[in-house]
Length: 233
Image 1 (tube, rainbow, N blue to C red):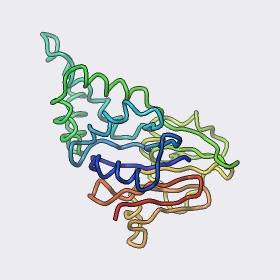
Image 2 (cartoon, helix red, strand yellow; image 1 turned 90 degrees about the vertical axis):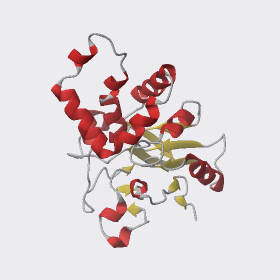
Image 3 (tube, helix red, strand yellow; image 1 turned 180 degrees about the vertical axis):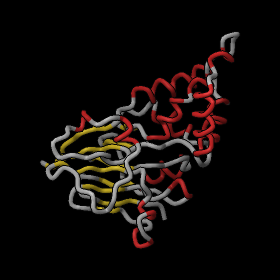
Image 4 (tube, one colour; image 1 turned 60 degrees about the vertical axis):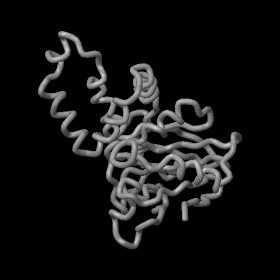
């Protein structure tokens, strides 16, 4: 069975693992997390990243918040006589933006780790894909963080830029590939209208599963094989 979840944003790891148990997730199943494990709440998602390092049946797809963390990875460089010279105005602006967008809790949590542990996390994130394609019961899927910005029917998924896959903000009327179902998060469903609060949005060509964990709400785990949804009570 294939499961997907998205935008955990520091959601408590113990509750996340309980949710997997509730869904009957086993070693024979596979989990895709559609980005944004980190930032905004709790430990900033560091415990989840450390857990992912050792999971053979779980894969994080890069989200915009992981991309921002990688963009600020210079803060973990060894401080030497060249460090100050490397801190350009552009880097400082990037760091300020990231911290203002919830990255402060994640940076504080990472700084408590050993240099080796920090490097393991950064190396893992650098290897995370921007999307995955798969087939389940003769139905094809694209799993991506935010949707497909600047969508065109003839545009192949591999031709989208990282920005188009990390920062899309789809309209409810947007239509993607007719023969490939796109699953993403990034845009909390409650941001569309009150009627979508705590609900997965499904259209003919795509599905949004971001329940707004960044705002303290509970995420949803979806089993793609039968579209069953699992939530914490």
